[in-house]
Length: 324
Image (tube, rainbow, N blue to C red; front, side, top):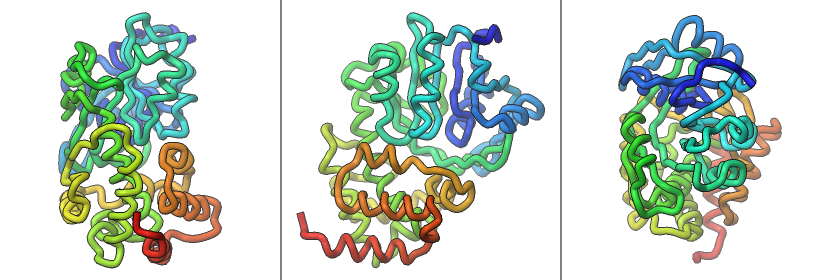
């Protein structure tokens, strides 16, 4: 293990969301260490600082950054901000490093808390729902496209605990909730629509508002919402009881953002790397999302290109299914 100095907050995954949150935390005066597996990003941050760009804020902060092998021996508070399929690799180093009263917060997409609970125990895990739009631009540079809902809460719901209050106080835009799973399942439904749109070359707003794709988006959201074990919460224009209206509100919300394409699209087209689709397929059942998964796999493996033809195919498939 490393003998590097101990920091109060360690953000593991210094990309779009992790980097954005960390920069605001540092700007507010909090003691933060960044950790990322990308050596060029770590080097750039240590050499030149971390820059947040875009219409929301222009930040340039000095913050130490390390590779996973150089994490400190003891960690008090960790924020996990890696892609879902990297969760286990990111959390395993914490098994021996997390302080006895340590807390780990996941700010990831999907329902990743199960992996954290398996490795660390539920008593050490706090969850969150993050809808802030951000993009990794290049080593040391991140775009923050908007300000959006951010909720932090205990996995089991109920009481707003002292550790949740601490995290809300430290993290930008965060608010406490007694139903974080309700927000996460709302994000799963909205996220499923983003997955559908990402296989096309349309912006988020365009894929949500075009009339020919509205039945697909509504059917997809219903498919996901039917699986939620808790009451689903509303956020940023998404209303589980008004999916038709949600499409218009979400399109308007995304048009106001400097982030016009989803992180999924950027993984497929810009960064050309593995998406989080396999983790999502573990969480979500249903024929429409399964078809999305097959198309995403085809794109990842070079068997097809990102195109509106893929979205047309999904719309036709959804229309062919019997009405629930």
